[in-house]
Image 1: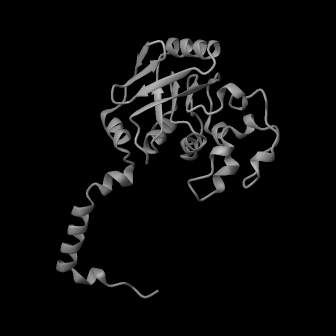
Image 2: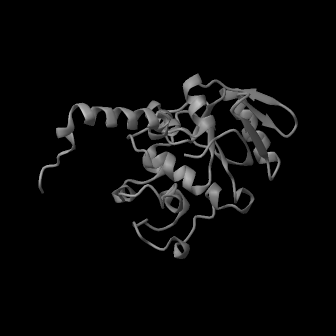
Image 3: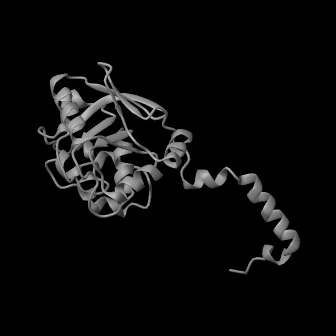
Length: 216
């Protein structure tokens, strides 16, 4: 997965509490066995005025002009600001996949559902917890200043605003290490690829029958 070090991006405000994973990526899109292609259907029931169908040409679907991500001032946003309990509902890795594939690198909220929170880290997507007061202030800033951007410095564990204000955030050391280095669970294992190959070679010397394969 991609490393996360420092990211500066336009912020989109999703002024809703309890945004569940079925709103983030509706259930009908979970039929795909691929890990790609979910971005166009992020917040599908809110972004479009018709019913989303897997495989449909989204460029021809009617957009909801009132939904924040369809507004011109938030096009190209890569940081999402939300209210408390973001990512509640059923477990699905497709939720952070959809957010990433739309173009978001991080989401800031006062609280997250545990499963979404853990799935995000495992897929290189950064969920940042700030206080409700801090999130309120950021919403006010975004609404007041078109083009509002934030810089997220993971090494320093701080969100920086253009006016110099800083918002520190907490993150577990192991999760920080994985994001900074771009390691998912497979990547963590492959750090030891040489040792794994050496072990397998030595094992086959001691137990050569393990190399035999059953006929299909």
